[in-house]
Figure 1 (tube, helix red, strand yellow):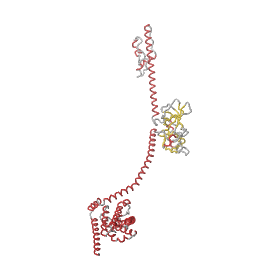
Figure 2 (figure 1 turned 135 degrees about the horizontal axis):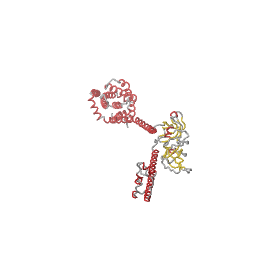
Figure 3 (figure 1 turned 90 degrees about the vertical axis):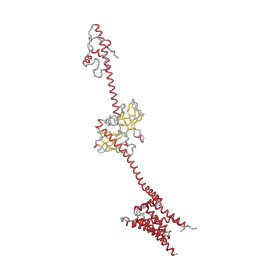
Figure 4 (figure 1 turned 180 degrees about the vertical axis):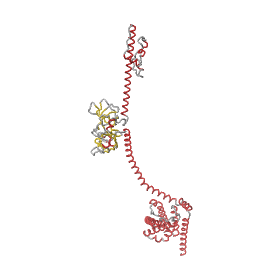
Length: 161
Length: 387
C-alpha cells in the first residue's frame, strides 16, 4: 500500500470513527451501529495481521475508555477480529457488497460475543443479548457498513492516469 | 523468501499474542487500577472523541426534549386560556356571593343561559336555571352584582324566562341618587353595533332638571316591580326630542347582558321591604346628607323662631315696665302679669323664654325685669335694648 492509499485509508477510518462518536449517540438505537468495527475491518484488510491486531487493540482501548465496565474486553475482541480480518483479507478484496456485508455481520457478532464472554458480570439476559440484540446490532452494522463503503468507495479507489 | 514469510507470520502472531495478553491483563486488573488508566485515556487521546460524543448527546437530548417542551408550552398556553375563563367566572361568582351576602335574604340565585334568537343582533331575553319551584314569580326583579338585569317574564317550575333591559317591552322607574330627578327608563331605540348596542334612555325627566354626563341612575322603587336603589347605569348625554316639558337622556347600562352568567332573582317580599344599601352607598348617602341638611335647617328655623319669640317678650317687658313706671309716677296701679309670664315664672324661667334647657342663653335679655316685683321701680339702665 503506497502513501496515498494509506492516507486515504486513514481519512476514511477517521470519518468512520467520528461517525461512531457522533451519529451513534444521536440515533441512540437499542441495536446500535458499530462504526468502529467497520473502521477496523476497512483498515485491517490493508495491514499485516500483526499490525491489524495492534490497530484493533488501540481501537478497543478507545472504546473501553468510554465504556462503563469491562475495560480490556473490547481491546481483546478487536485485536482478534482485526487479526482475523487481515488474515482473511482476500475475502474483503472481493468486489461483492453482499459478501462484505456478511463478514461485517460476522465480525460484529464475534466481537460482541468476545466482549460479553470476557466482560461478563452476571448471567442475567446474556442469552438475550447474544442471540437477539447482538445479531440485530450486527445486522444494522453490516447494512450501515455496506452503505458507508459504497459512499466512501470513490475516496478509496486509486486513480491512474 | 519462505524464511522471511515465516518470520513475518511469527511476528504477527507475537503481536496478536501481545495484544491478547495486554487485553486480558486489563480485564483482570482490579477496578481501582483500571479506572485511572481509562481516565487518563479519556483526558488525553480520547478527549476529542469524548467531546464529540458529549455534543451529540446534547443534540439528541435537546431534540428529544423539544417535543416535550413544545407540548408543555402548549399545555401552559391552554391552561392560561382556561385560567382566564375560570378567573372571569370566579370573579363573577365572587361578586354574586358578595351581593348575596349583602342582600342576606329574599333572593333566588340562578344561572343565566343565553338564548339569543338567530334573528336578534343583541341579547334581549335570558333563560334562568331556576323556576317557580325555587320561589321565582313573574315580574320578579333580576339583578347582578353590577346592577339591574331585567325582570322575569315567565316562570316555569324549573326554569324562568327573563326579559332584559334591552327588550322593547322593558320599563323601569328611575331616579338620580339625590332624588332630584325621576324618569322612566326605556331601551334605546336607535341601536348601534358593538358596545353601543346596549344603551338605555331615561325619559320624562323634568325640564328644570339637567343631568350631567356620568350621573348614576337608580331604580326609584315606584311601580312595585323593582325595589329602590338598584343601579341601572350612568347618564351619557341628553337626547334631543320634540318634548317641551321633559328631557330625555341617553344612558350606559351598568350590566352587559352578554357577560352575565349568574344572577339573583329578588322575591316579592324583598321588593316590598327594599334592598337597603346594597348597590353602593350613593342613594343612602345622599339621602342621609339630605336628612342631615334638613335637620340642620329645622334647628336653625327653631332657633330663629325662639329668638324672635324672646325678642318679642323682651319688647313686651320693656313696654310693660315703661307703662308701669308711667302709671306709678301718675299714681295708678301697675298692669297685671299676663298668663304667659305667669307660666314662665312657674317653670322657673324668665318670662318670654321657652324654658327649654340649653335654649335660654340666646333669648335671655330681660330676666331682671321679668321677675321684678311690680312695686319695685325699674331702673332704666337695667333694661337692655333689643337688637
